[in-house]
Image (cartoon, rainbow, N blue to C red; front, side, top):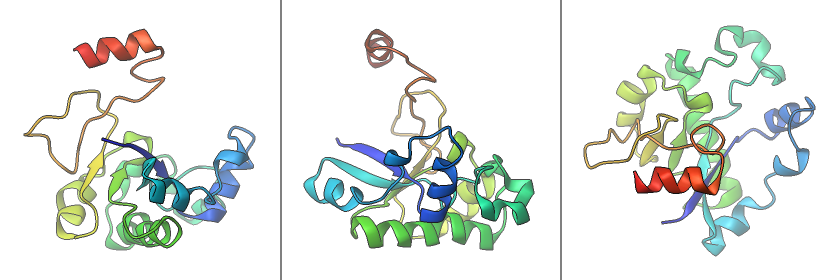
Amino acid sequence: VRATSFVIASSSARADISGDGTNNPDRMHDSWWRVAQNRGLMDIGNHGWDHVHPSVQGMQGRAHLVEAFHKIDTHDEARLQIDDAGDCICSKAGPASGQLFAYPYGQVSDYLADEYLPRQSKLLGAVTTEPAPVTGSSDVWRIPRYVSRDHFKSIADLQAVVEG
């Protein structure tokens, strides 16, 4: 089992997000993706094209989607957020990257999970922020996960999650 770092594909979106004063710009570059993936330190996963983040310049024309990833319900938006993002990530991190998707804000789009993702062949699964253990019956397009700071804040909290 390796850790997965879910990344935003668009370099301009990452620049817009890091320039809003709330994020560390040093964490938003892509120069480390291929090294991390190739060394087996972690997988580089897909976190969408632009995270439908309010600081992203391209969101002005798509205001209904700002911080509302669950509203993605068209083929064109799905292609941008999933396929275009995946192609970009693979070009920068290598062909073995981008096999898992993390829904921005943990918001599952029913269109993506029920229609779009099951018909594609590049992604193996998608994770939510629903705090629950993964079981054999977990939906691969709605895999639960525990998120640091949301579901555990300390080593003791994490240990309690692991111990059930």
